[in-house]
Image (spheres, rainbow, N blue to C red):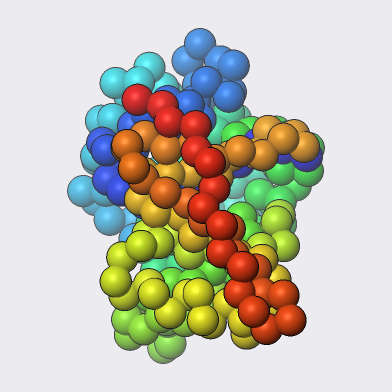
Length: 234
């Protein structure tokens, strides 16, 4: 089993303490970081901001731009073998998963986890991919984006759990009710919090005081919701 840091949301700058935590998990003096901004359709400003912040954190950064460039299977494998940490950016998660399918990237990243080849990081909607399903405002059809809250399914399923990033925002309130549709446990991750796994150990961390995360499960159609104790890092 590998290493995951799934960040509930927040800007790159605001969640920098969580990024630093993930970088320490690599145990590398100058970590090699692969940024995958597919969900934002390889947004130029997002890429530039990421490069600026992570270069300042003494990282070597490369970007996998699947919406703007074509890659051979060998080129993608070389990047995966090169990286110490992969960071999946936020945006339209369904568009991202469709694009990843063209390159069999989900399987490649699942293999990274199973072989503990690198730290797997995702932020906001980009954090959803490591779980079984996610609650997001992305729907994708025929190249158009229609912002509705839906389930995103057929993910990597490294944890058989549903997840809602940006939890606590008013428009995410239906996650609690709709979790009953899935019959699996769920995590509600507010901005500035993260689910962390290192081997068989899991914990939750936060980088802003009073940021919260929740565990939810339905038992006999009754919901049990419990606030998770966080370890705060600043």
